[in-house]
Image 1 (tube, rainbow, N blue to C red):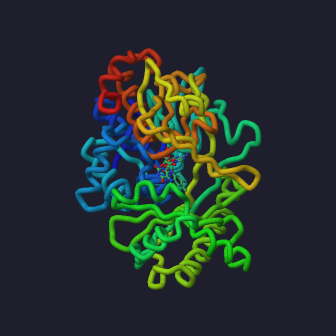
Image 2: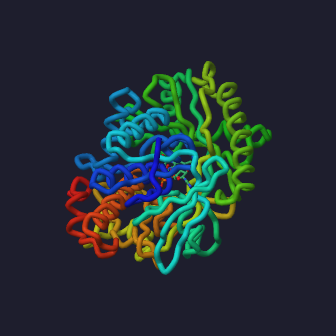
Image 3: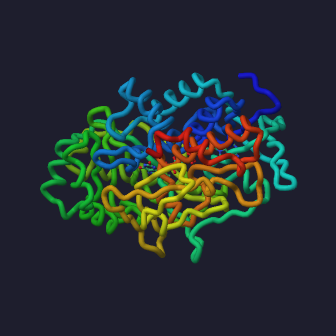
Length: 434
Ligand SMILES: Cc1cc2nc3c(=O)[nH]c(=O)nc-3n(C[C@H](O)[C@H](O)[C@H](O)COP(=O)(O)OP(=O)(O)OC[C@H]3O[C@@H](n4cnc5c(N)ncnc54)[C@H](O)[C@@H]3O)c2cc1C
């Protein structure tokens, strides 16, 4: 696809946040370029094969609609999604269709490797495009790279890991299996509830997509024999639209930093070893898995946490736990603190009471010391606790869409991003703020 040397808005990274940002920005009239280092869309939602969508609803209220809902509607058209579970391939197809319909320019196979940042302003990015360096200028930039790449390359401050220990969340390589006798697996779980996490019994009766997490006793035995790596303390999977299929969010890679290529390499290797061990274990030791088989493992290891931007506001754990609201809210969420801990820390999952939600303020998307950069998605300005809650796909999508709206309104009204009138932004995001 031909692309220009200059755009109104440049979105860095085509995960769910970047996709939603680019669609919104272009739809509001700004000429928008979406740059992605891989040759496909989706980031963690496709390369990482992350499914399902974590909670963004109450019984009678949906907190995130907008572009996020359009993505889901596209996937459902092709039976690529049931309830909140979906296929990575369908996600890619749906995202591509929406971007194409919106006329967004996409540049694949292009890693941003350098930025030209002077006097608080990002002028251009340099991409590595098949060993050629190309410079692309922009008026407003949105960092949806997950790793805060634009901020890092511009020499702007960032945070990484736990404020006290520096710990990052563990990584997980997703994989998908077929041929599972789900009814038998479920029946066994209901008969031996103490061998599973209690929360799996809350939703399974009314959802078609169910989660099974536990198998503690059998896992313990294999750990004692050394047949499973010690980081694997339970097995967790969710069912998928196709009968007998499950997506496994169960491998657990500790002590590595996904913003380092050498650590990422180690993580990929350990992740793939763990996938083989888990499959052997399930097929040979667990009822209902006798005829199951591996369908695919994710293209890349799932990365929960790397760098976080420092913004005009930092979303924190108290905001999440107390359901804080803001006068300049741009998104709403109800997912609680969820930290997959390292060896020296406990994992934490703190659900919020039903009907309690918190808001994300517009000022959290403005990057400190920069006049024309917004950030959204996994790298948004947050404490480690705050990040652990807002990193889920629905919230990343909502923040991305908001960043796209702010960027486009700045272009349309010839304003800097901080001078965009919040009332105008709100009008564009009403579906997510009703
Ligand atoms: C193991 C695991 C399990 C999870 N479970 C769930 C779950 O069940 N439900 C849920 O809703 N969420 C879950 N999440 C969280 C969620 O998947 C991610 O946080 C979310 O998808 C992040 O979206 P994003 O768009 O912010 O970033 P990403 O998806 O990380 O996208 C960033 C994109 O930027 C690109 N990029 C990075 N740097 C550059 C560069 N320099 N140049 C060009 N491109 C670049 C990347 O290639 C990538 O495509 C999970 C995450 C993990 C890892």
